[in-house]
Length: 114
Image 1 (cartoon, rainbow, N blue to C red):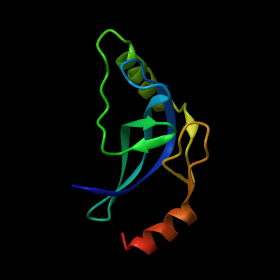
Image 2 (image 1 turned 30 degrees about the horizontal axis):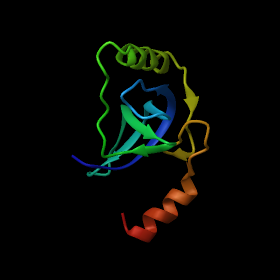
Image 3 (image 1 turned 90 degrees about the vertical axis):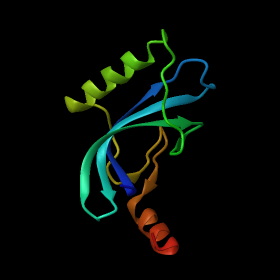
Image 4 (image 1 turned 135 degrees about the horizontal axis):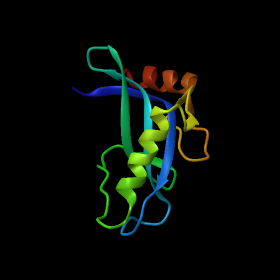
C-alpha cells in the first residue's frame, strides 16, 4: 500500500547523533495518512529530516550506543500522552519552520493530479 499524503497532527524532532550529518533529526509524529484506497488512517511515523526537509526515501537508522533509539521511544511516549508540537493545518511541518499550509498542498496536488 502506498500513501498519497500525510498530515501530522503532532510531532517531535529528535536530534540525530553521528554519523548522521549536522542538522539531522528524526521526525517522530502522529497524524493522518491517506492510503491508496482513499481511506485515511491514524499512524505513527518516524522520518528523517535533513536541513529542515523531510526526506521520504531515507529509512531512519539509529547508531548503536548513541542513545538515539531511546530518545525516539521517549518521543513516541510523549506523543501518546498528548505532547509534542502542533502540526495541524500543515503538511510535513519541519522543526521551527511552519511547513506547508493545507491550501498550498491542495493546489499542488491538483497541479500534479495526485
